[in-house]
Length: 431
Image (tube, rainbow, N blue to C red):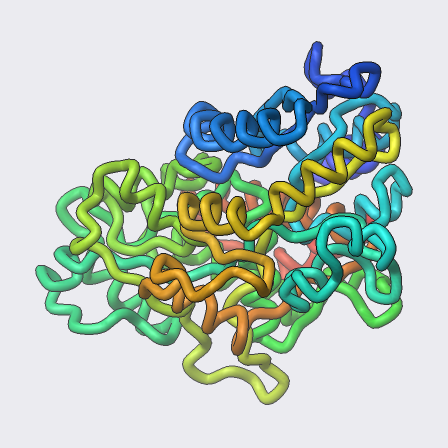
């Protein structure tokens, strides 16, 4: 049953049919004065994102005369929707993509390549932060998108809960995090909030933990190397927050996007691993003085081949479908979204970092949260492999971890060998 489900997931991710896409979200290229834009969910809700973006799109229409039809797509649907549009040749003109999917989407040959000539039309290659642009496609090929939001994972902690538990500083190791989590887990409150049903987030943590244990998910040729003891040990460390350490509410095994943020903001959990969540905490009415931010912890005693990595290089890119009948307008829209003004406005709103080099030192990007993200990206973040099968890694391994969390919620703690067997099954599904 497990193998059959994995096979179905893999096929669904790679060969999603055009039926996945919603009714009137198709390309609007017949009208040279209209574009359709799929934006990713960056705030507390799809509605909040629309509220944030619509004034900016109105500015673009005023400047160019081009109307932008907006749809904010939840992360749980976005990859399949993009693959469906790539397969069918029908869909929006411009889209947001998670930067980890860049090489997988590039392999579909459905997106405009941002070669040097195309990059010159939006201000030139030198405008973009090199590390962010490097996460926009496979090495040695023109990027399949350009970056608009730069992110990294950080550890958020509730200062009041820490003080009440006698914890003076945020943990720097996973062992300290578990010890602190146990002190915080009492009176109906928990040490750490996670989202066990969020497959992309699961795979992100699987990657970072594996790096710390000296593992890897693909070899230099792009061949999957899922079924290693290092990878299995890394996943067990994360699953055990529920199953063995018991510092996470078992109900979190069913949590999807933003539900862990809500628990942290309401004081139901004392710690949270997330990307640039400060703006969401503000919208959820959490007092800014009540929370702090620190780098994601490391292993206390890493193996000799362990790497000093505590986050993937996270971020959001913007891309243009080749099937758009208004590519000139689409390129103008990308230029608008990566302009100094819009990069400042949108990244300040979302709490992320600009992906361009020309934005001045705005105080908003020097706050403790943004400084932590910036330092992580500069010193301890690593990019997920830019290989065509990366999206399958996220879908298969993230889904496997979802199942493991469901078992952990029932009190079952998987062994390393059991996880390794499941990883072998997942590895066999990669096409």
